[in-house]
Image (cartoon, rainbow, N blue to C red; front, top):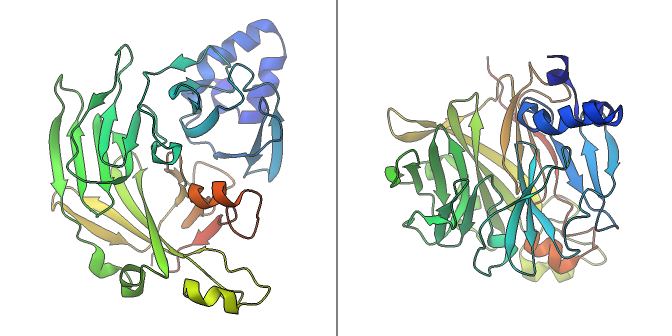
Length: 338
C-alpha cells in the first residue's frame, strides 16, 4: 500500500535497494501511476539515455541505458499510463516499453511505411491521415475501423469505446467490446460559432490543434489550441510575407488561446467550458490528460499545460530555438467559476 503512493523518483530508489524490491517494482509500478504529475521527456545526446523533467520538482532526471535494447534510429512517438511507444524506423514496427520496470518490450504488428508525424501517439491505437485501426493483445495485425473522414487529429479510448476527432470537426465513436466494432456516434461539428472568427477564417495567419481529453473519468473534452503562425516581438500575428520586414527579429509560431468544450451525450452536442474547476489539463503529442488539482501536487487549478507538438517544424529546423521546439508553457483560463 505504501508503494502505491511513491513518486517516480521514489520508485527508482525503491528499485535500487535490492533484487527482490526491484522485482516488485517491475511487476506492479506501471499499473499504479495514475494521478501523478506527468514528466516531460526531453532530448538527450546519447541514444540510449533519456532525460525526464519533473514539473513538481522543477528538476531534470537522467535515466541511463533506458533505450539500450533499441536501435539507434528508434524514437519515442508517444506515451500512455507510464508506457512509451517506440518506433523502429528501419522496419516500421512499434513497441510498448516501460522505462521504469524495463521488462522486455512488447512488439506490436508491423504498420505500413508512413511518416512518424502521421502515427498517432496513443496506447494501443494509431492514426494515418484517413485510416483508423486498433490492436488487441494477441492479434496478429491491426483491425481497421473504416473511418469516414480524410484526416483525424486525435483519438482516445474511454469506457470500452474509441472516440475519434476528425480534422474537419466531425466526431465519431465505436464500441470495441463487440467482435465486430459498431459505430455509436457520428457527430457534426457544432462549436465553430464559439471560436473567434479570425482563428478560423485567416488560415494564412493562424492554425489550430485539437485534442480529446478524458476528464473526471466521465467527461470527454475537446480542446482547441489556436496558434499564430508568425508572431513578432510585440506579440502581433503577421503574414508570412511580412516576416522579412522584421529585421533581425525571428517571428516564430506561438500559442495564443485555448477553447475547451465538453460533450453532452444526452443532447449530442459540444458545450463550451469557461472554467477548469479543480482541474489541470496536459496537452501534447502523446495522450492528453486531465488531473485533479486536489489530488496531485505541483499543478495549478484552471490551467492548461502544453508542449510543442508541431513536429514538422521541429524536425525541419533542428536546433533553431527561435522556431521548432519552443512553444510550450502554462496558460490559465481567464474566466473562473463564481
